[in-house]
Length: 376
Image 1 (cartoon, rainbow, N blue to C red):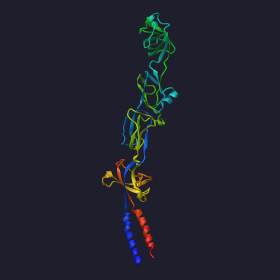
Image 2: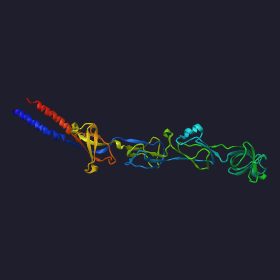
Image 3: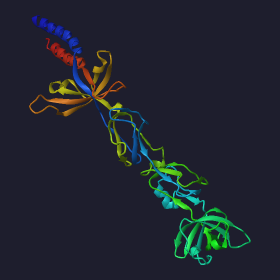
Image 4: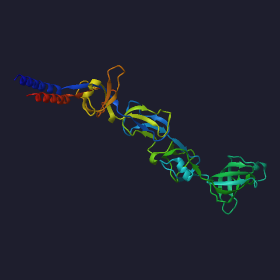
């Protein structure tokens, strides 16, 4: 009878002990850290003309990061665009290897005259011509009466070259060249043959990001034709000269600076994704038996100042290497996954609470069974 009474007392004690343990909790102080790091790479290269973000800032997907200065290509001659072989996204060198140039300009001076002073009027002044002189051209044949105005562009001994600025002539016809607009015989400086002025080939380096002209456009010398960026564009796709983010999160570092250069593939940003934030805690060795990977914990953050601002997290990893110095009690870092909202910032303090009551109840239930089994 006495033994039965003792067993009954043990059972009552266990019954009281179990709910008390069920309410048991273990807490750990921690802080928010980055679970992973990703990068934003430059899709093209060039000189950075503007930066739109800084370290510590939150960046959104598609947000502008930096503006890259383009290389601008201008018309070296006035005329008509006679062929455009490149388009936005194309690599200039590739286009030039296929077509000789990105585009061609048919100069306003579409006729070139190869002339000499052999038929000049017999005057010493007419035996010497100068580059840059304006001359007046008339067809040698009186039947067509073609006239033009040109400029001497080159000299070589008794020969020289004239490029027309206006007027119409016939290909391969013979023309007489004068210094006077009145075609005075005394100003005749020679005779020449008309040919076609070669188109001006326009090329460059890098990849085309903006094209400002099309076939058939009339352009003037110095007019902007197209703009390029360094390197080849992925998929021959040109979205402008601004680098945008292809990730979202907190900017850890900025790898570019205004006035500096970047090459395609260089790291422009390192970013901590918000979706990969974790809470880091430190576990004493004597608490390892109560914390396991996969355990669900409650997270409270210091910024909430006592308000009901908690998150549910999961223990993602417990280190197998102690973080304590030699001679100290061993402690182990653990990382808790959770879904961070816009209020969570890296480095924030947090308290992780693990409900140990279920494990304790299971252990004590086994003890109860042992006590009952000991009855006669």
